[in-house]
Length: 198
Image (cartoon, rainbow, N blue to C red; front, side, top):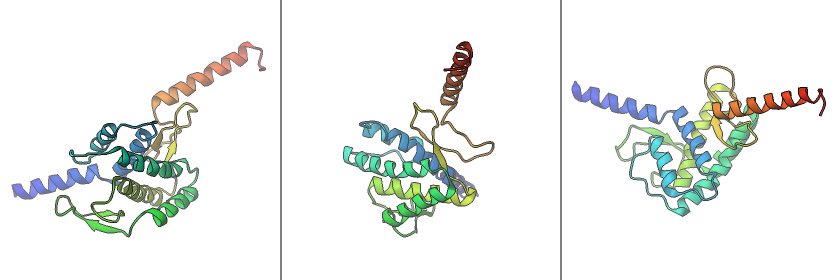
């Protein structure tokens, strides 16, 4: 009985770390990290580990360059204003960049789960694009709206997942929302002080 409980606990923990929402959040985090001019491979590996990938991640500059190209394609999905637009972007990415849907357990090292990359040894950029497309596709399907957004703050380019309860978010963080609220307040006070005109 103890063995069955341990296996069940291991599968439950794995499933939580690799849920659709967790994979979509990982996609957003990687898009943001890869947006830097020259992202450090070690920093990108840290993002992957923080989002549930196993520890022995060795990325090269070439790997990161490929992942940056994938991130630029995925950013279009986050920039989509409607479910129709997000679906069009995802359909194009699925047609042009992914393999057929398949199940893998990585040689028995994990529970069975779906993949859209061509094989278990696919390059990092192919894996990143395919796994992100799968997660974002499921979110569009489940919620019938874009899976995420690009932060509405003009000084921020962060992608974020907007799914969840409550009103749809416009900003990636409270910090960006607060900064924009303070900026709008200052603008309105400036207009008031100048007699209502600019």
